[in-house]
Image 1 (cartoon, rainbow, N blue to C red):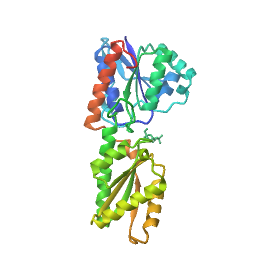
Image 2 (tube, rainbow, N blue to C red):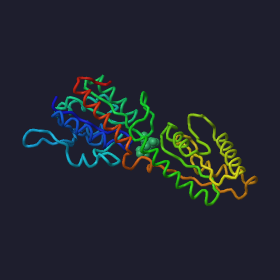
Image 3 (cartoon, rainbow, N blue to C red):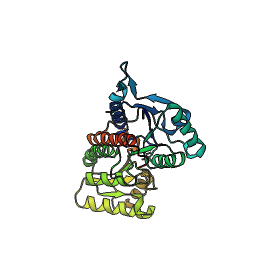
Image 4 (cartoon, rainbow, N blue to C red):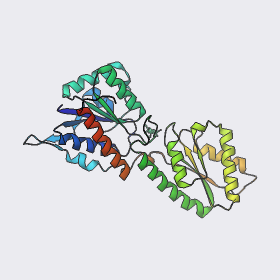
Amino acid sequence: MKRIAVLTSGGDSPGMNAALRAIAKLAAGQGLQVFGSLEGYDGLIDGRFRELTKVLSDGAVSVDIEVDVAGGQGGTLIGSARSARFRDAAGRAQAKVQLEKLGAEGLIVIGGNGSLTGAHLFAHEQGVKVMGIPGSIDNDIGCTSTSLGVDTALNTIVEACDRIADTARAHRRAFVVEVMGRDCGYLAMAGAIAMAADAVLIRESGKTEAQLVEDVRAVIKNGFARGKRRILIIKAEGVNVPCTRLVRLTEERMREELPTLEIRATVLGHVVRGGNPSYQDRHVAGRLGFGAVSALLGGFSDE
Ligand code: F6P
């Protein structure tokens, strides 16, 4: 084996670059060249690659300097995308042709559940050797306790909520803070525990809008009655009621019992997805990168 390819796919997550760096370093150490497919599976289908290693004049392989530097940064150096074309068998067949043209004998896919489902299909249908690295802030990937990016995202959530709590206490206010996670309530739940939040609202609980308003009302009423100055409610993105609507409905519902009540809504959005990876995400990226390269060299696929 002389060449392998790697791609990042789906929503980026902090730690993807750290994984690319680890893969490039470990592969280079084994004399392997690594090519990054630009913008996920789309780059694979189109044959758009960027080398993440370089061959020195004495034939040794080393890591590209930009890849080395990017290892400590958020986002992904080789871009990411959600490829519609890779969902079709024709797109996957074309991707195999491009890998063969490149001379790559293995592919590492870093991404979330949709991207890894695509990787699994690619390996079985096209007979390509594929290894997957779970990378998604959503933490919704099977058989994975903590995917790449989750630790950094949670640190960002905690930092943001600490700031919100400062201003909430100053004004004796309630806040509903929405965090990403698509349909999965993990970030909201783990963030709420770390913040000792007053409540967490997740899609998985299956509550109706009216039930959510009643729950939020009870939490706010009890909290202020106990003398609290900050009421923090963390809401997962997957809960189908927009933050501002939930706040408006709750204020209307409580107008008579707490006429001076002020609730504010903050949607953290993509702030949660950016930022330099934490120690844990870099560490895990290194280990998973090592595992993926070693597995391909050992002849494994789709494990
Ligand atoms: O899957 C990662 C994620 O950040 C989800 O939490 C979120 O629902 C989605 O991607 C947002 O996607 P986009 O960046 O395309 O708006």
